Image 1 (cartoon, rainbow, N blue to C red):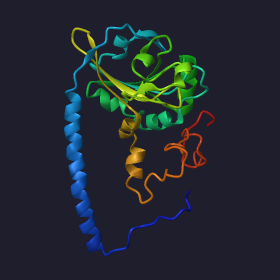
Image 2: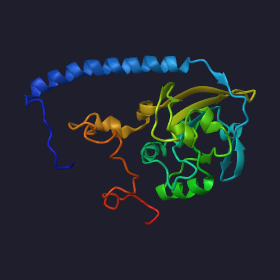
Image 3: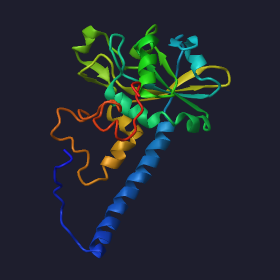
Image 4: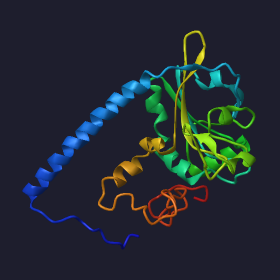
Amino acid sequence: MSGSTVEHPKVVTQEEWIKARKELLVKEKQLTRQRDAVAQERQQLPWVRVDKNYTFETPSGKKTLTDLFAGKSQLAIYHFMFGPDWEQGCPSCSLLVDHMDNLAIHLAQRDVRLMLASHAPLAKIDPFKKRMGWKLPWVSSADSDFNFDFGVSVTKEDAAKENVYNYQLMKFPSEERPGMSIFYKNAQGQIFHTYSIYGRGLEDFMAVYAILDRVPKGRDEAALSHGMAWVRHHDRYPESNIVGVQTAKG
C-alpha cells in the first residue's frame, strides 16, 4: 500500500490553492458550528434512572456501579469487545483505547471517570492489558447483565440473528459489540444513564481517522473486506519494533 499512487485533482498556483482552501474552510466552519449545536442537544437528552444492582470484577475485588464512579459524578465506560472465551481483545477496540489511555487524568479535572468494561473475566483482561501497556482501569462485567442491558453483548445463539444494535435491528458479525455509555450520579447517590453511542459514532474518539481524512489518500479502505480490516494490535504491525512500541516481549 505504501507504494500506491494518488490521483490528485489538478496542480494549481499558490493563489488558486488559497482560494479553494478558503471555500472549503467555510464548509468546515459550518460543520464545526453544527457539531457544537448537536453537542448541546446531546447534553439535554432525558435521563433514565439505573435501579439494577450491577456488579463488576475488579483488581481490588467486587465493585458495584456506584463504586466505579470513584468520587466523580460522571462516569464514561467504553464497552471493549472481549468475549469470555476470546484469547485477546478486539483489534479495533484496541485502536480506540490507544487514543484514550492518557485521557483519564485530563477528564478527571472535569469530574469524569473514564474506564473500560468487558464481558471477559479479569483473568483474561489483566494479561492483555499488561501486554498492551495501558493504564486505564478495566473491569469485567461477566457476572452481571450489564453488557446485555446496554446493547453490547448477545448470546452466541442470538448472534446469528438480527438484534437491536445502535438503536436499530441489524446483523452484527460477533456476539460482542463496541460502544460507550455515560452515567451520572447525583448528590443523593442515584445513578442515571444519560447517553450511549455505538458503531461509527465511536470514530469521534479516534484521532487516527481525523488525520487520515485529511491526507490525500484518505482512509484508503475501499478495497478492504471491511473498513477496519487493516487494523492490528499496536504490537502486531511490522513496524512495531521500528517505531518503539513497547510489548510484553520487550
